[in-house]
Length: 475
Ligand code: UD1
Ligand code: CA
Image (cartoon, rainbow, N blue to C red; front, side):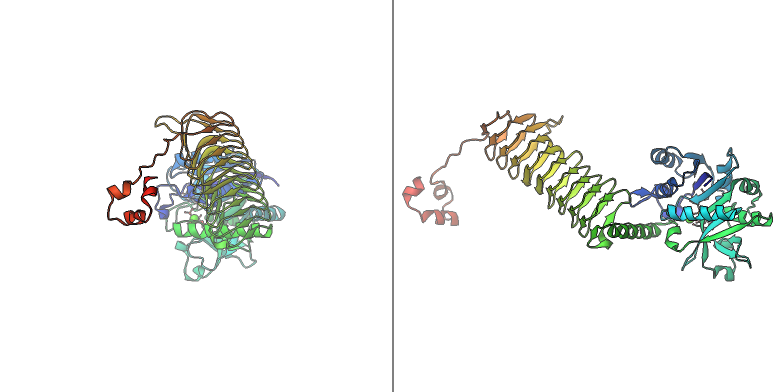
């Protein structure tokens, strides 16, 4: 298939978004709007991709350089219409082969439909092919005016349409395949005689037809695909449609999604079969979830790796590696650099960052573990804090294998707890504990006998205490 060039028109201001962010940089399902379009065209093996940028130029260019470094950007300084944007895109372009033109604000387009358009275009040897769809509410779209032989006569914009033309529900998707040489010949002939005083790319259809060109409308089944995003309502609608599409694909591939409406999986995430996603769960970015894992309810995994048969319950995890058969949650916060090795556990109200928890080791309750390596088979008692920050710098803690950290220990970094060592509950550990030793870092307990009767006479405590013999009171 001789697809020479793809042009993506993305210079519009997106005024209706009412945003400091350029429209095409708004994200749904883990990709920006223009990112979805670039992704859809990436499989078409075009020789070159040009993106026309304008509003928010620097931000859009930087984003495109990051996600599609092969694409070339063309700058449209002032909005002159889709025809004007196309004129700029064609400057310096060899007019050969096929050119595909589409907008940067249609995130639901699939490469399947684009391929279908191109195949149809090439098979029929058409001058131009226009992707169209039947839209139940065509308001705002250009309408497809067909000739008697069903070929495409022209496209009329909503603002320029008369009442009977507005009744037409076949709409222009804004996706076109052109014979590049014919397009190059016609694009200079556009005029601004329309309600917006702009050069409309859509007018090139009538020009080509009048010059004897053949124009094919290519009707696709699903009008969802061509939905454009012009405001935040449409942004949310497109996001929901994409969510449904992704969830349906996953379910057909063997993933259980208990409540598809409240489960949001980015198109960039990967989930293996026999994973169970519970309600209220978001799997975003480059997260991968291996077979047999159960995630949720109400959990977020961003750029995480989840191993086979792991369990993540009511938790928020970013850039964490959660190994096979690991237990996380409920109410656990795993931050960047957390590594939970096979069979380990980060339990309720535990926060971790930049820390490795060895095989089978457990941090079951109410702890902070930062900047640490913990060996295998160790247990970190409830409410232990890895004191990693001295107010200026972060320091490291090393905990060996089969260690028992007593509840409410403070491990003041830098510090090392040797293999098989213990710390006494409530200890503030500021010095290394050698292998096999117990570190006790707390004051010895003393009881002040009779204190309550002397200092709190007449209280319920004193009354309770007075039920005991004076011998007991003396200890
Ligand atoms: C356009 C089509 C309409 C079609 C609809 C499909 C025209 C005249 N109309 O209308 O027939 O049904 O798309 O969604 O083409 N852009 C530029 N530079 C400009 C103007 C626009 O780059 O000077 C870009 C925009 O950023 C956008 C795309 O072109 O990505 C389409 O522009 P937009 O203003 O959204 O056109 P519509 O009114 O939606
Ligand atoms: Ca649009």
